[in-house]
Amino acid sequence: MDRPVEERVLSRYADVEQNLRYLYLRFLGVKVADDDTTSTADLRAVYDAVAGAEDDQEGWYGVCVALGRSPEFHIY
View 1 (tube, one colour):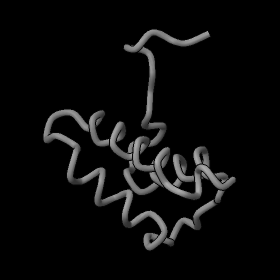
View 2 (view 1 turned 120 degrees about the horizontal axis):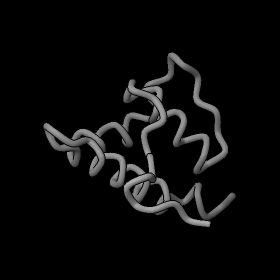
View 3 (view 1 turned 180 degrees about the vertical axis):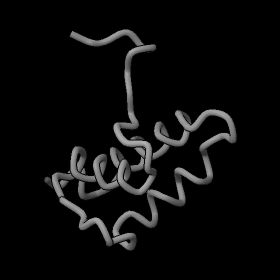
View 4 (view 1 turned 90 degrees about the vertical axis):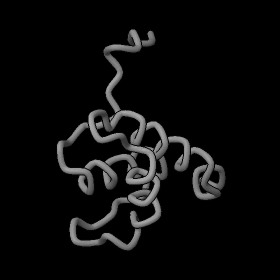
């Protein structure tokens, strides 16, 4: 059953990099090492470009769209 929109959470962790690694694993099934920022650099660029100063939820939406459109998502 779907949760109401106000209960949906895209950011499990407060740290942006840690949350990017989490979403990378959830969407693509690939674990990214804690010290690897290269694998998530493109996602970080999307997040930074879309996230607002007061609300980062739009940034996380952008990251999820980017992950869902990536070739890796459709190959695996």
